[in-house]
Length: 199
Ligand code: ITT
Image (cartoon, rainbow, N blue to C red; front, side):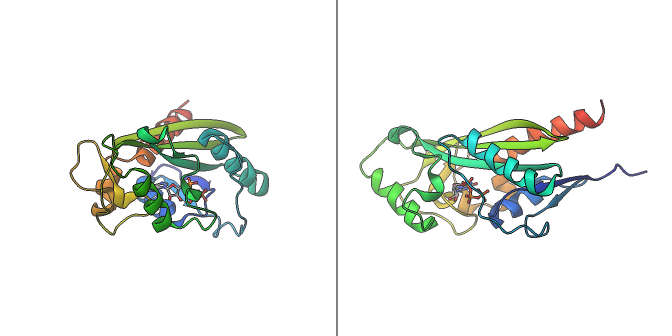
C-alpha cells in the first residue's frame, strides 16, 4: 500500500518559489498553491526579520484556510553591506519589487568592493496541527561583478554558491537545488514531518 499524501498549502504569491518547491517536495507531499486554494491576497511582510515575516505569512493563510500550511521568507545577506539587502531583498530598489532594479542597486553598491561574500538565508514557517515550527536553510557564496545566466529569479544571476563556478541563473533547477538555501530549509521540514508521522 502506498503512503498517505501529506497536503500542505504553500503561502506564497511568488510562482518561482512554487516551481522550485514542487521539484523539492515530491510524493508523498502534495502542495496546494494560494490560487488553487482560491485565495487572492497580498500577504503582509511588515517585520524586520525573516522569521517574523515567515510567521506572519503562514499565520495569515492559516487564519483563512484552517489547513496545514507553510510559508518562507528569504533574504540575500551581503557581508560588505552589513547584511543588506536581507529582509528588504524584494524591495531593495523600491516598491516596484523589480528583479533587475534590485540587481543594479546591489552591483552599484559593491563597485570597487573586494569582499564579495554573501549568503542566502531562508526561514520556513510550518503550521502543522495548529502549532508553528521554524526551519532555516543557508547557502554561502559570493556576488559576481556582472550578471551571468538567464534561469531562476531574483538575485540568481549575480550569486555563485561556494563549491560552484556557475551562478544560480546558469544552473538547472536541480543543480540550484543541490546547493540552495530553500532546499536545505525544506529538507528539515521533510524530516520533521516524516518523524511526526512515525510517532
Ligand atoms: P512571498 O509571496 O513568498 O512573500 P516574495 O517574492 O515576496 O514572495 P521573499 O520576500 O521571500 O519573496 O523574497 C525576497 C526576494 O529575495 C525575492 O523577491 C527575490 O528577489 C529574492 N530571492 C528569494 N529567493 C531567491 C532565490 O532563491 N534566488 C534569488 N533571489 C531570491
